[in-house]
Length: 266
Image 1: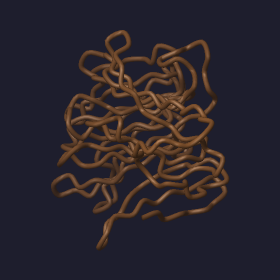
Image 2: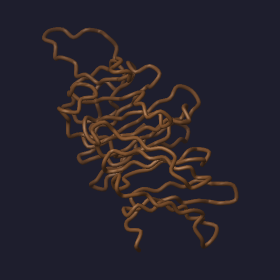
Image 3: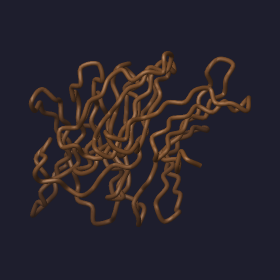
């Protein structure tokens, strides 16, 4: 079709409609009403600000936000089907994945290319309010990028303390505690992964949680407790493309990688 390949999709119920929303490489945003043969709505993104790479829909279906290959995050009013705001990452880094923040209605969570950066942006003001940084490069650095990026995000619902699960090209699954960042930890990774700690700081008005590799100590190890498993289970052997959760009698994490492997963690 002239719309091109689908790059991202979401499903939601909107009153009498069951809508499958999808974005295409040629800039179309389409809400397909599964209960009829017609589209509920169609939006057209201007490709001058980059190709659509991901999008997220507000829980009340009032607005949506798209991310592009050139670092633009653009919001659309779904009621009037009009663009309402647009902001760009300082380095114009590719937006890998977008998600809505569970607590702040005007915030989006954006995973961008490089430095395993996941930032939370206030789309009303354009401010980068909170950043998760799992890279040896200086936080918020644009000059020394790490090649690794987050490809999959899961954010907990609004009840309780919000947590974030991330996974991507370094093949590690990270658990981020947004209320108590020092409790964050790596869920799974390679056997050679060093132990890490998490520290909070303010940089140019942005609250940053940085992952720092612990220095190897010679001699007896201390008895300081650490979060997460004592020895990391071996994870994927290729880029992790997505992460999700499901609940039965206990909670499980599901991850999928580029080589077609799906793993379930408990």
